[in-house]
Every structure is written in C-alpha cells, then in structure tokens.
Image (cartoon, rainbow, N blue to C red; front, side, top):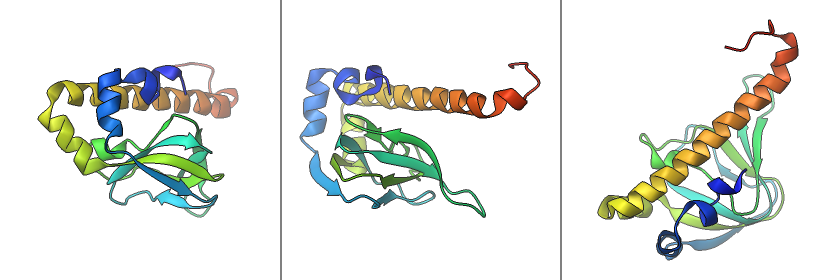
Length: 152
C-alpha cells in the first residue's frame, strides 16, 4: 500500500493523536480470524507487526486471498459505512500485533467533530480507492491475456 494511505501519512498529527487515545493494543496468533464476511463490522485495526490477509469465500472452493496487509496499514473499512458489515474476511498470516479501535466510539468522535470526521473519511476513502485500483491491476494480470485486448 502506498504511504498516502497509512494513518501516519494520511492524518494530521492532531487527528492521529486523538484517534490513538482510543487505541487498544492487541495481538493475534497466526491463523486467527479477525473477522468474517457478512458479520457486523464493529472495530478496525492498524497493523504494527505481522501480516493480515484479506480473503473472500469462494463457493465450493478455498478462501481466495485478495490482499496482504502489513506494518501501519488499515485492516477494515466497512465499519465506516452503513450497514457496518464486513465485505471480506481477514486472517492473521503470521503473529500480528496491532492497534484496535472501537468503531462506534470513532464514529461518535467523527459526528462530534466535523473536521476530525472529514479527515477520517478522506483517509478511509483513499484506502478504499487504492485497494480497488490494486484489485483492478490484479484482475488485469489474471485475465488480460484471455481478454479481447480492449480496455474499457
């Protein structure tokens, strides 16, 4: 992920400090599921160490890894958008240490302080845009040799 989407780059210092006041240190062993597709998105994480895989359940097959996230990257953005349900799953691929945030508390802070809320929304929007772009590139890598040769 580009540095423009990491919390330390995307948020001004005063907003980072405010956000970090609600951070809770957590750790996950390799193989631990952080969340499941379709379940309630009630928290999010910033990875400190380790790797988290975002995955998608493919009917009749194993989970497909969509992206791997590491140091200083946001795990989970579905908490920010109604209906607050995970669109993918996530699993620790190695031992992970992370900062965990309560989604409801952060949404309340965003509602109370529009400037803070806008900064969070822009950050989350950048993360979503970057991940959509990365997904498009991966799809082109997979399917472009079989396509008609025309990009739409």
